[in-house]
Image 1 (cartoon, rainbow, N blue to C red):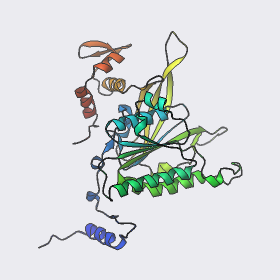
Image 2: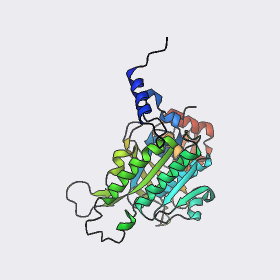
Image 3: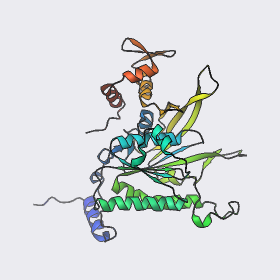
Length: 343
């Protein structure tokens, strides 16, 4: 005797049969245990343990939309560049929408990016950004004949601070005609890409700029172009801010800075995880030194005295200890933090 289906399965089967068409030739209704878990979808490495800790997973979740927001000079582009480099090292293709026309091959190589294997786009307005993302996701779906791709794709948009639409470019921004237009385009664009991103295992990261609101006496003193559009529909919202500059006592010129990153919204683990890490202007992020910070806190496996670290009975400078950490020790840190990808 055939096993009797429960109501959830019966409804899902009926909806898929009724609404599947030539344009929508995939299932749109499931029971919750039928959909892919984040672990089955996979993760895209970021090359930054502090970022992974805030996300709560070993990288950007595939098939999801994320936002990285911060004020000017807070290393948003540097964080994304490091993630692109880490993704390329494991054979994941990356697409970068450079709306600010600021990337160069020299700067990319500084952060470990292989420029020859990066698809670089220069959108002319915000609507163009979303049109190209839709095209890319549809192309991936066609190439994989509607099946889930073997590897995810990383798509980054740096940044959303771009004109809303071509027909509005010559309009006076003070006329009121552009008011809310960015938010409308972002909201509509997200509705188009969220489902496509899931079905193609694409992780889409938008960079937003936090800008001051001068003269604000009440409410938020910072805002983003497009308002809260991504916050409502994105799975993870990250905020990054500069804490302090790093200076050599012998020189007044900073050689780097310490930044803090926090998950304001997170649909994978508890939100408001926060970590700090250093960025060196001439090198970018030093991933191994971030591991040392986690050995000190929260794992409490080392003790620190001034600029020296006591680890397994020996004393090291931070840079020397970072170089001493091997693959097994790094794997152990991920495991103890619960960030080790299963399988």
